Image (cartoon, rainbow, N blue to C red):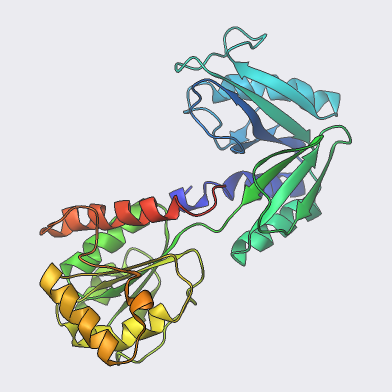
Length: 315
């Protein structure tokens, strides 16, 4: 399972197993007390035979959790279990000493799972709202629904995973792409360099060959997109930045020194781009300044993207 599939995988696996006739349950953290390894809303899927997908701890007690869930599946009704501190199962304790309440939703409807997965594929924000009293689940397609209890129901909010659009050429682009891929970002690369595209071809990263700075590229930039320009030949930058600034991405960064960034901003102003829009560009890009080798630069850029994404509404 790729890191990019962490929120999708339990639902996709449970749907697949349900199609094969295997009864199961969706398990969701609905309460956290003290230190806990995973946040509110984290999910795993468990089958009646004890197999599971996903983690609601750090991976240390999942088999024991699955064993507890099996009895709930056998009973056929939703239940809330305490795991860790305060649990009746004294052998299921977190090393951090905290406790979580988990809602075990038995036999979720395949149609609901399919709809949720389709909304994820469309990069839509929605909530999976579970009603333990009635053993049912519904989808609420309201972007402002937060993860947490809504009266007697629990809402688990899903937002699109971070999309990283990397545009440029050379070792800096290649290192950043490989690091973003390992981090599980929805990664896309655009470059005018055949060598750069060939170097990334074996990774499976979607790539677009640029033939002109004015060229558009898939996919569209949405609110959850971070765009990074990694050019040393900055003649390519201005038309690309104009396109990117016209979109709704949450992060824009561009390679170069403080001096280079000042000149970049001056050129954009001369082209009629508003100063408020230009201020959205992170330059020099990344949290570590200066970061001169490609590996450190890649980490620096992704750390800054993660920091900015954390300011958006949480799951």
